[in-house]
Image 1 (cartoon, helix red, strand yellow):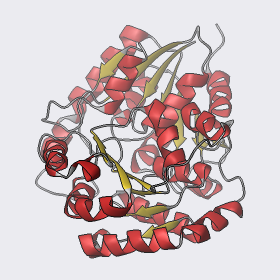
Image 2 (tube, helix red, strand yellow):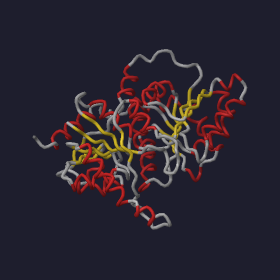
Image 3 (cartoon, one colour):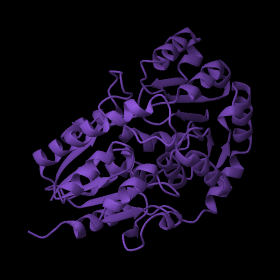
Image 4 (tube, one colour):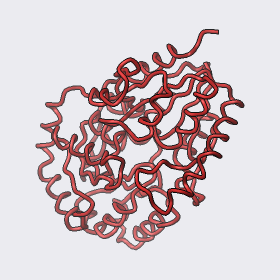
Length: 369
């Protein structure tokens, strides 16, 4: 089977790739750079290249919910995006396309429909992402992660598969726990692109945090803000005993995420669904600062869901200051046993066989030769 996988959400895509038969041919289509107009390579590009999987970059316009000064320039990029998608599809000749949301999948899905190539979509959110809503009429099947998403898609196309979890995380948490660090560890992440807002809050708190915690900090690699370089310089100015307790990286390699989550007492993060899913699976408490301009307030919904099941404290970005965050960190550390008890009462919300269920759906959509 020849399959094109369109990025958008890297974690579940990697989980499916990992579960595919070794003789299947995969082409990954996604972003080569972290942000448009910058030359920092994206985590998905680096990861896919490390796996020796062919990668095709695609650029296109975004469908925007509100008319702004960027709307028309963005719309003008749609036709080139469509023709680039046609070129990719005709060159690779896939049996099926699997899309994981995000605006980059739109031209690939439209071009696949035009060429009569079957499309399968995967929806990670509790509701429906904007891209999957647009693309759903052109898809053969739509795999959903949560029952609550079913009302947004046609019943005859929709299958509840769950959301795939990276094998590194599953394997890390199936191992013996080993020796725990005597000093509690906080893992700070803004997702694969990093979060300048969270990085700025942490920058002001680092000397205070390192008195009682070890910190593992994933900053992203935005050239516009230069957070990694600035925080690295800050680390070098710290006394040796504090410096050794602060680990900083642009990206966290996928194989390392499970081990870091296993060691961490709790996490500080945005509230993308893949992050929230991994927190649920690992039963790891978190302080979440949802991205305020995510589609349909998606990240706030995710964060409140995690709070409802007793695993998270939520800070709205408009209310977040370094002191508010510091107070929240102290409160979570003080109440960590309560969060651990809450996690014991959780049902198994995340299924480990989601990737195989998605692959089964894909195979059903591939026409027989």
